[in-house]
Length: 146
Length: 142
Image (cartoon, rainbow over all chains, first blue to last red; front, side):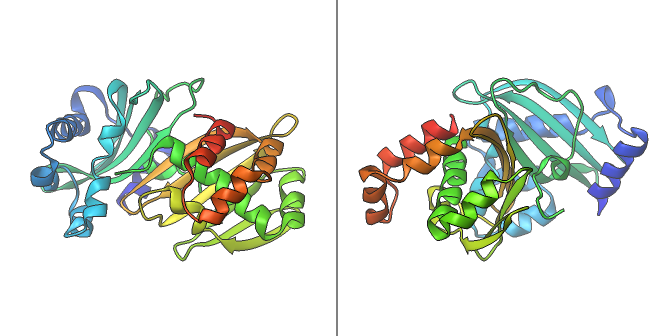
C-alpha cells in the first residue's frame, strides 16, 4: 500500500517535504471550511479519495464520520510528510471543552488532487504534549494484534 | 453523530466490567498480573481479554452500546500503574475513521461501581442509564 511505503520512508530516511511544498494542508483547510459551512454533503468527493467516497455512497452513518473535523474547534499547529503519491498530515488543536486532540490524516494523490484516504482522531490527555512531526494514522492506532 | 471522548472512555470501563461479570476470577487474575494486558473486540463483537494469567472471551456488544456509531473493531492496551491505577490506550474503528483515546482509572473504584443499587438498576433496564454512565465517566476521567 502507498501509505505503508510512506511510513517506511519516514522511518528510514526522513523523506518528508513540508512547508511551502506541502500540498496537503491547503486541501485540509478547504475540507475544514466545508464542514464549518455545512457544505460537506455536496462537496465531500473534492476532499476524500475514491476509496472513501465509494464506501459512503448511500450510507448516512458513514457520511457522518467524514465530519470528524467538528471535533476540533481551534487549531494549534500542523505538520506534513509527503512522498511521491501519498502523504500524511498531522493537525493539532483543541475541542469544544478546550481539550487537546490530534488528527492524523493519510492522503493519496489521484490525478492532480491530494485526497484524504484514512483518518485517526486521537484525544489527548490535558498533560500530553502535541507531537511536532507528522505521522500517518496507522502509526498512531493501538493494535494489540501486532 | 460521531462518538465523544467520554462515550469511548465509558465503553472501555464497560468492557472491563463485562469481563468481570463473565468470569470474575479469571478477569481479576489477568488485570492484577504483572505486566501489560490487552483487550480486543472483533467485527463480530467477540471480545478477548488476555494477559500473562490467561485468556477470557465474551460478547463485547452490550458494552459498546454507549457508542452511537457501529463499531468495527476495538483494540485496547493496558499497563499497570502505581497502586490500583491502570493505564490504557484504546483505538475504536467505526468504519471510515478510527478514534484513539487514553487515560487511567482506579481498578477498585471501577469494580465496586457495579456492586450497588445504581448498577443493578442500570443492568435491569438493559439500556443506557445516565446516572451510572456519569459514575463511570468520573472514574475514567473526562
